[in-house]
Length: 582
Image 1 (cartoon, helix red, strand yellow):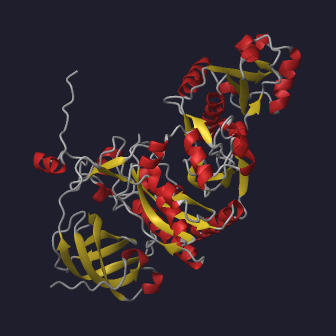
Image 2 (cartoon, rainbow, N blue to C red):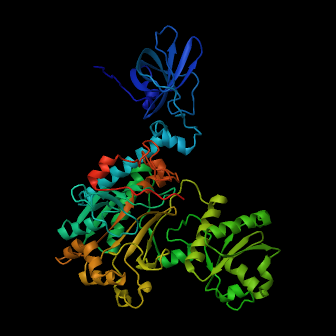
Image 3 (tube, one colour):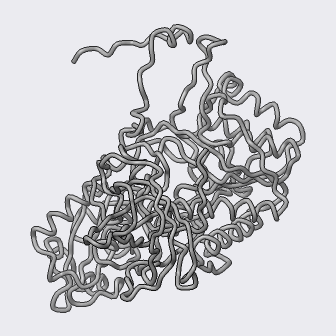
């Protein structure tokens, strides 16, 4: 049986090792043949070191991605390679063993690889050999380690909850798993461990956590996957302030232990209404200014009919772009506005100490002066205004435009982190699909005590003890206090339109559990994938998941999901319906 006598990792060698005989193992990143000398860049998970092979050494054939075991002496180089961590030294080989060969890789494993993402995902096992990719998984591992250390030290108990669960409405479509034993019945993969962790509080554990896998059958985007991981936490007998304080301590440790960044506590708290009205988002990035201003009062008597009759008239100011905002650029901005659901959208330039633009002819001198005063506008600035009767379209549209300009104009200082809580969310919202009342978070979120009398008559005016942690404009986690009064929970179900039969079919086991001395409790979950994405400074969640799905929800390495044979389907009592020909 082979014996691997590694003494050091390639990337950990430095000048302190000069004169030592070492044995290293790694993959060939690059080979340069200079005749009497051969130089090989050898790579392992700690980094790359140069190996010098002299012509008197009997060596095997060496090609890229071959695995070698090299024994040799660490020597100081005459000319240092400052682009390499180990660039001051090299290993002069005395013995080389070929451990395994490799075919010519279909993609480069070099850091400057320009392969497109589809190819990289197909050959993920090669793509993950790149140091930048491996560094992200080191960060992910450190986040998990810091989480265990912090929560264990705060008296939390790690408990696993089932993957095979009942299907319950929690905001997204379930992945269903057919039962062979109970034909026609299905398990669901959990969208989150929500009901289980609440029942663990009823059990009396008081402080629970787990690194939980979750599954949601929804459309994908750059920061979303069908199967993902969250740091799931639930506590009893803590109020909202105590939960947020505990969570801030965890975040502080995670940032410190992973990237050495000191998070200053306490974190800011921003009311949901302020977040939407000022920043146009319930997950605002406040690393740059560009606040939204309410202009309805200014234009309440404006000659421009749209402003006079619209419920919402709001705007943002973008500094110093009027001279480059051509007619063509304005057309581009109009298309963006349509994409962001802003149907009435206007571009107004500040030139010659006044405002200019198609609709400004309807403005009085006083309105023009007041408009520039509200924004503190100066020459060469541009004011973008949106109007309409649906707040979400106007506010969130301007918020999306705000984020667009921040990236377009490089307004965000690199290597900075902006952490804040958004609190006091509405309890309900109106579904965009069917107009029905739905929970903003989930139906177990506790309404604010002072709003309980409004549940029946004014449900959209009811707010909740809900909170999201926002980092650099990403929702990195969120949670709430939970309903522990069975009568309040029943009333919430009724407001949502659930019949008694619905309640029993979907939540019967949980409603039964609530009857037996449920403690006041609450919790939250941090998205492990998103946290890793933020801390490793990528905007693509697929970069921090070992074998992710693409935007079509397909695993490019394995091609899952795949069809299965008829025998498997028959065993489960399932028949596939053929799609009708178009």
